[in-house]
Figure 1 (cartoon, rainbow over the protein chains, first blue to last red):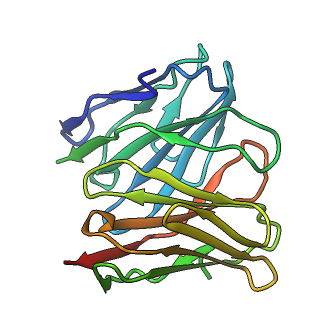
Figure 2: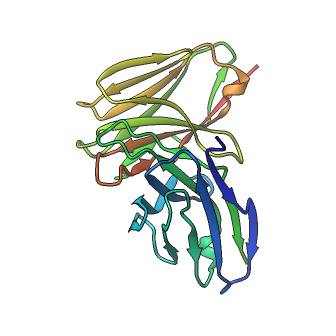
Length: 115
Length: 112
């Protein structure tokens, strides 16, 4: 199993450009998540999904969009990139066990710089 | 008040010593607690999870949970230079989506 994979690893965008960060998991997990991590900070949840066709906002959703058409894929779309979106983006997945024992597994991250 | 608070460090310990990392959380409904290790430039890696009050041991790692005090800690025995990393405390409140709230992390440095 590759686990959670993300592409690209690095990207530099100009202000106002758009891009899609790709995330794929091969663990047949129901739940998927997008986080961003700014320097010296913890991870903040952008969006999450509990299954194909179901997505919802996290703590910091502004400027981002997501979709989930399959169990495996959960792309994150940035529209009109701004310098404030410079960050490291992590995708994660979990089985979606009810209650407290659900564990999230993280992808390798995408380092995005907006200039 | 932040939902999950950690001392940012750095915490410096000599090789072979016990490293003690602490985390407090504000929401009493929090149900499960996780410690992730993150090396510089890498993704978070799960080390321990704990759900019940008391201690949970796994090799050199022990997680301790006190829900009454809203406090969770991670002890690393026989610390090694390879343990040098940022340790993130994360809390699951059991809400729909099993979302995690992360602390900012504690930097641990183990000196040989």
